Image (cartoon, rainbow, N blue to C red; front, side):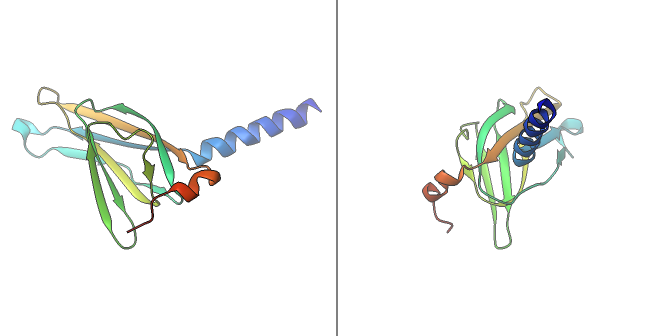
Length: 124
């Protein structure tokens, strides 16, 4: 019986972890402020996700979303907690302070609970 319980707990943990997403990006300043490099792995969200937490990028960041029919860019100073991200492919990059060579940002999300889906704004 203990084995079944632990398998159930592991399964629930694995399902929860698979459903969450982390969107990360780094900006590395180039020589004399030129030729900077943005490093951001694209993350695909197949369903609406709500932003839970942001780490890094005290000067703000830009989050880009690409879908089949559009591209959107949201630049913010971090006031994104609780915002719903619509399905699409996301990348993020920070706005580094002038005195830093490198800055990173991580945006953590989880799927919107089914009961809340009716509260989502309609897609334009």
